[in-house]
Image (cartoon, rainbow, N blue to C red; front, side):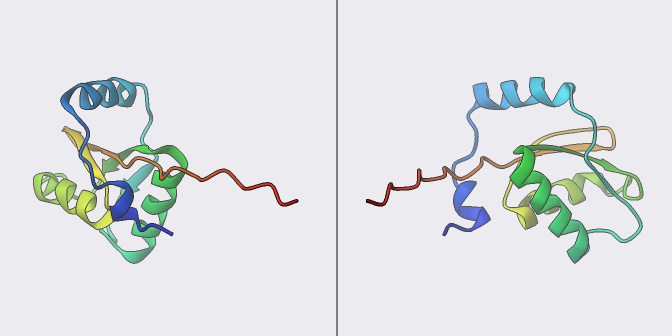
Length: 106
């Protein structure tokens, strides 16, 4: 089984980043980073959101001043790529690992 960092080893190309930014414009924030900060429960929620959606928008409610350091930190801790940081909103992307088809047992 691969780890989250294995799935995100290759950074998106420029054209892929443009497409991801375009997709992200239509998204609503899935998570909000509040007073607790980058806690273990928040990272678990982020992990699940990345597994479910690949492209996740996060609103920084309590870390507006530190957003330029928090955004790359979130990407590093989640094994994802920072797509964009606009205002107090961060967009992260992690490609889903390819699921091998189940072999037919005969």
